[in-house]
Length: 178
Image 1 (cartoon, rainbow, N blue to C red):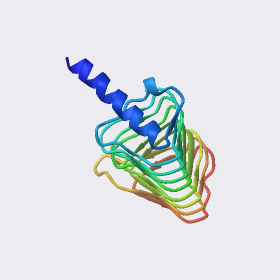
Image 2 (image 1 turned 90 degrees about the vertical axis):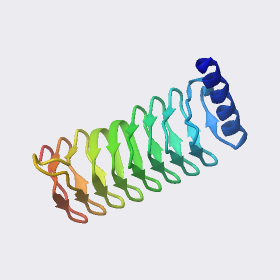
Image 3 (image 1 turned 45 degrees about the horizontal axis):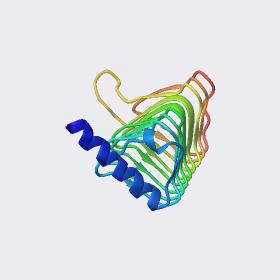
């Protein structure tokens, strides 16, 4: 009976989303939570799962195979494919979160880019910053969980590990493997 109820609920949520202007490649593969809020002109790829507490702004693209819960995605952002947004993720306007990126309790400001193969845990990433492939923000130093700060326009080289607490200034660069 619960499975039947879930099927009916999902059908209603999908129909409501489509009626409000959301485009879904394969609606049968998109799963909503009861409190999911999706703006207008949003594109959602197949096999996307929305957990509790998700708010999606207008003109957002969510590519296939993403899992999103407890997150806010602002207008013009692009997420995925194969991205995971965990509770506390705030993806700013026109920001990009790419394939195989996990974001937890982090803020990406306007136009920030984290495009592939990266773990972003507990940082603040400034506007227009670029985080290279394979980067890890390690928020635990063995004693405390703290914040990593990446300034506006900064560029983090691929395969970098940023062990908090650390601050990368605006416009700064790190080399690959730092």
